[in-house]
Image 1 (cartoon, rainbow, N blue to C red):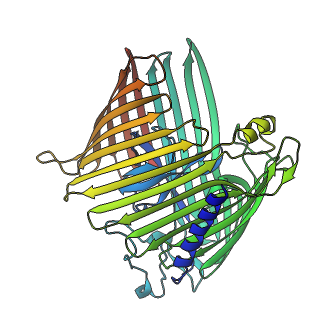
Image 2: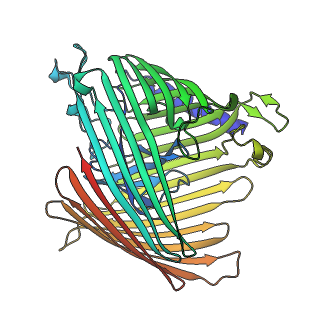
Image 3: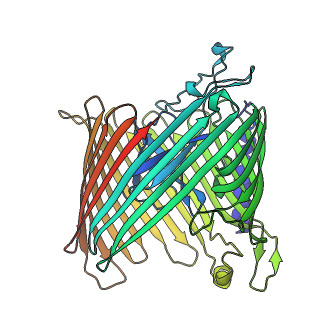
Length: 544
């Protein structure tokens, strides 16, 4: 692991050295939009957003796990409301899950519009960088303009099969009210209420839960200094997820720094827990005017009942080398360790490393490679009863992923990807290979057709998958229909089980009623070993 640590730190240092040769510009507060997983294959994740204008190809999307933000997907393709993304490592998602995208709005100086940055040379052709005119700031007059965005959605996910009907209903509310009444105050809120109705051996059970992921008040003292209080998701410290407390940030030209202090949400009910105090600090540097090249470093100390739970350092860097190469590096290094005899040491422990490079060879060919290494995250007080097992059984997991995309012509698109994940103790190994062929405009009928062949293998079995999905937009893109099918063949290698087949048939429908209202529905039928399952998803969205 020492050699791995040296390699990681050296890589990050090289990236920083290269990118700091570029000149810089003031960073702005980041914002977020959320999307929903609409379809999952062994290779890709398909997402739906209200609008994808601010999304950039090859950027990262995050999910929330146990109150922490986890980098999960890399955005690969997008249309007006839908996207296709690739998993990072072994990140697991299912239909209906929510993902979050963080972005920095473009700045428009109202006193000198001729100096508005419209340079798109640093991004690939087709990457849509849209200036956010509704986020206009006049830096000279320090005048803030009111901008209120929000979304309310109602969704239901139901499954029929063994055990009866299981249903999950979710209500989501998201509000970004910036500079209310043209003041210096802003409010951010994202929450959802989940109602589960489960059938278990003929008995009905209901599980209700309210999760507030974000509810905070921000005060902008001026264009360079801001304060936030409440439940906040730090845009600078993604790894800590939501926090109940305060954040302060100061900016100077190309540099920013901030401090955070507060409490982690309760891991069971996601409510307030005053035993889980944490504090930290961060600093960052933008290396170019477009904010595509940046480095961020932070420190976090987490406690449980006043005793250290975890203490770690993280570094994150992204850069563009010319027009065709994008680099991303992220690592977490734990600084605190304790054994079962309560002996504390402050030696370095590399917890995670993620490196990726995207290379646009030409207008037709693109290559991608990523590598990640992770170890178990140990919370020494929260996991005190299992500390002996965790410290003695602490394998590292490494993953390598390679991908090639080739555009044959304007309508034909093909590619291949391979990945391998291995664990140092030989457990949980996994390998995957995919071949796909997409047609963006079918002759005679139009629409998009996506076909994928996949081979997957783990410790116990291997399975083969063949899937196809057709999407047709109608009525000036107000209606979208997507029939799909998938067949999977399972072959167990360590058990005396005969190979068997699982079949999926589905149909998704989406209707944009107006600029602010939309409705969608999905149905999926699956059959395996004589047992049938039916899944129904519906959602209604109101934007304002």
